[in-house]
Image (tube, rainbow, N blue to C red):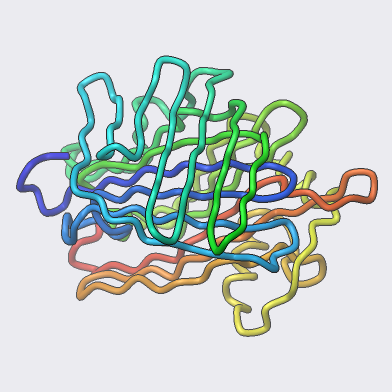
Length: 291
């Protein structure tokens, strides 16, 4: 993050997925549209396999630091350790402890760059720091405790070319298949060019969805979001729906984004289990600022 550069943006994403529940943690140095405005913040989201208990919390953050070697420190909340990551939150409403181990090295596009403009002087970058690893999570809220072993994922987005200028749309998903995690992203650049990135075969995601009997409830008020999901992942979110767990609009004077998150629930020997998470955003920026 360049000090004083109002186009700089950065956020980090952490995910624990087990059969029974998923926890998604985001740490934002700026808002999702970039621009460097607003104070740092953390969001924690809890989703259970049945979708009956969904909770979210906003956790105040005073300090975010990123060392030259890429190690992240967020107050006493997120600490990068030799064997992985640990996230600990203790507030009046939430207690959380996630330990994420590494089972493979980082993955991502060359140099992390996914878009650039002005001769490469400005860029948007994405790197999957922890594509897959063992994780253990404990979370307590509203008088109840949940704990389970599962699978970890961690990535980060940063740069000086805000997403709303670089892209018209992006879609992304992770699915735990056997003892690995398939990561897939589809980016529609502001020029209209479509690029896909995956640490496996992109088609594997649609194949998994077609086999999984992913379950959820159709959301008639979200026809546009379901259409984008179908276009990105080759899967009909109405005929055999995934579970929509978050839909939000981000609006700034020069840009906006319509964001959706789905929980991917599959079946294993007749038993429902959480297998992954998918996200999609439709982005709109001012024509003057587009590359």
